[in-house]
Length: 270
Image (cartoon, rainbow, N blue to C red; front, side):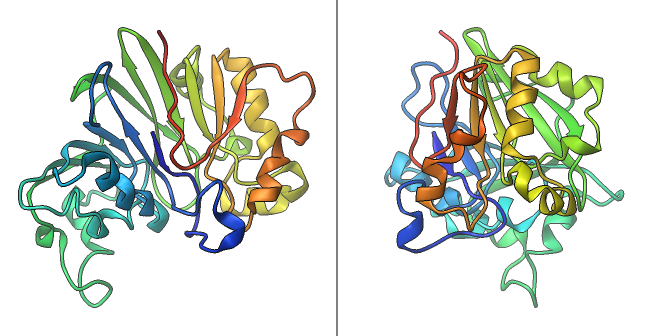
C-alpha cells in the first residue's frame, strides 16, 4: 500500500489532495496478511501507518533507500513505530565507515532535533543494508547500489513465491545503469520507480539526480516488468498535472502504467 508518493518535501494544500502530499513510504503485506511487516522508506507517509494498524504498534523491518530527509522524516512522527511495544529493524545504507545509528544521529540529535535515535520508543535495531539476497520478515530482499546525488543510495527487489516488485524511488539513470541494476528490475511484476521530472525538465533532473517519466517508461519496457508505477512525484506537480502525466508516454503504452497515489493498493504477482 502506498502511504507517501512525493519527493523532496511534503506538498500540502488543495492542489495535492487526490494524489496526496506525503513523502515516500510503502507498506508491504505478505500474502493473506492483515497488516504490514515491511516498509520501504520512512518519509512523512509513515504517519499514515496507524491507519492500517489502529492502536497496534508496528512490528517488522524498514528498508531505507537512502538518508535524504524526505525518506526518513516520518520516523519520529509515527505513533505506530514510536511506541512502547513496537519492534523495528531499521536498515540504513552503509557509508563513510559510520555506524547505522550514527548516520541516523547526524540528523536526529540536538540541535537539529530534540532526541537521538535511542529516544524512539520500542525495541529498535539500527542495521546496515542487508546482504543480498537476505530473508527479511516473510520476504526475500536484494539490495543494489544505484546512482543518485548526495550519498549512497539503494534500489531493492522484494520477492515471495507468488511475485516480486522492485523499488527505486530516487534514481539517476542518465549517469548509467550497471548490469546488477538491470538484474534487480528484470522481469519484476511491479516496478515502483522515480518519475519526479519530465524530459522538458531534463536540466533539473540531471542537477538533482533523478529520472524523467519518459526514460522511466523506456527502462521498464526494456526490463520486461509487468506493471510500472510512476513514483516520487515532484512536490510542485499538482493533481491536475498528474492527471495528464501519461500524455508524455508514447501511445499505445509498451506496458501497463499507473501514477502513484496515496492509499493505492497494488497486487504483486498471483
